[in-house]
Length: 304
Image (cartoon, rainbow, N blue to C red):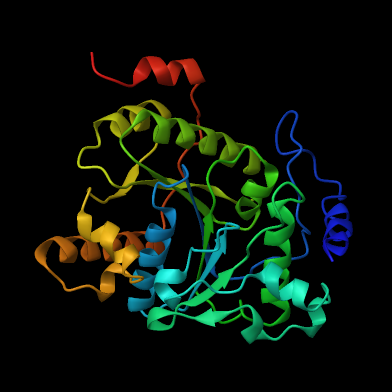
């Protein structure tokens, strides 16, 4: 069954576009498959930094603004949307395998599920470890959504993307997004990963519409190290979420923060998500993608 997927992958990216940067081998998706009029955000960051928590709560915030929201999890772990749906949902790859990769046999309910407050949830999944590329999965997911007309009545699409972007498959959502947002903590490893993501956004921006939207600081009471990096690279912190135990517990409870008791601390986080969603909906000028050299980051961060 995966042979069909491999053949399909080999057909992707044979157009005339120039590479997305010197030495690039990144996957290029079918340029005819576009999302449409929705505002599209791709959420990136170091593995374990809280991208899924951020994405799910941001999706709810948009939905509470009255927007029609679709969240697409792009991780083989397929846990991006479980706080919205309350369980791990089957992935697009699961659905395709069930019909021997005959996508025309799929129904909407085979791969798209309604979560908390009406957020539509899709888990793209991924090929078995070491056998394929996540870029193919992203392309097939968007193609299915288009064929089933799920994007026509959507206001906001959020891609929740796994870890680092060393592979073009990881960067594939950038080919659909308007803005890329980076989730980071106030530490060296998170900021180092953020710098690599800035590099990827710069590469993709040569051929696609995606631009850098800003930084979301998560699980951090301070922001001094992020502030140093932002000042050098011209980035901007869009939101700041502290090291709050209720945020950790909300995921263990399979719930979004908007479903918890609105204690003062929880209410402050809910308000920050609503403020972030409103700011992203209004939009703003893109930020320059100016990455640093690895050694320069090492020299910049830390205490004097």
